[in-house]
Length: 136
Image (cartoon, rainbow, N blue to C red):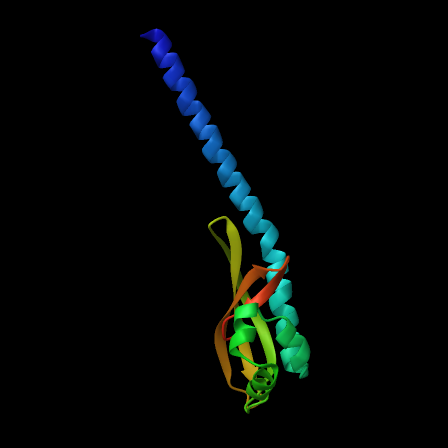
């Protein structure tokens, strides 16, 4: 009976160590992703506000590039009122199936002075990070 309790206790301890290890790994993965996710969104928005639609288009994920031609994206970005400034409000990172992805909340300022808050989805693709979905 006593040996069974020892083995059960060792098993529970081993499970706790495993869960703690997985939790630490997930925290590390999420923490390491926050910087590149913010940098990707920052670069995309900087290019959009500067009128560099070619550079911004290259930062889109493959799925978004299949939905938007480069010409269509350029027309969309340049349709008034265009974005003149932005502020990153928040960066959140989550994992799905062990793969990190992020949401960057931004406040866009249009040329009219109107502001709106949007969420940019940022995903890992081709060993880099890309803005995915309809950015604004």
